[in-house]
Length: 141
Image (cartoon, rainbow, N blue to C red; front, side, top):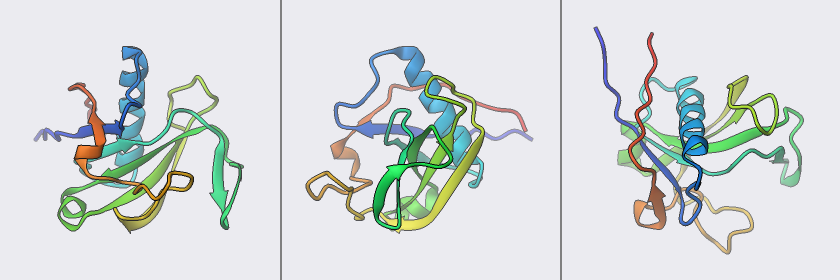
């Protein structure tokens, strides 16, 4: 039996990558990271490019696990409840796209505020995001 899982990919307004290869790689890593814990993500917000910082106990600093991208994903239930799961997809370095490890924070309300963003929500509504052009990505189980 095969299953098609349609996923929409979003970026914060004006943060969509210019390079098509970067877009494809970010989408692939986002999907792999979300799938590591969730069976069927429906919407994924790609929140960052490669970076190695994080917040631990309320303090910003270097992430001990290293380079990663940050995402928020939603499954069917989270779409209905206006919640999401934040996660990191760790890579070997700033130019690698292979998922080494993922971490996932529990479900949070979409209204949670971003740090350093003048009160903007971590996961704003679709009207405040740019949707990535359709990118075909699949895997075999």
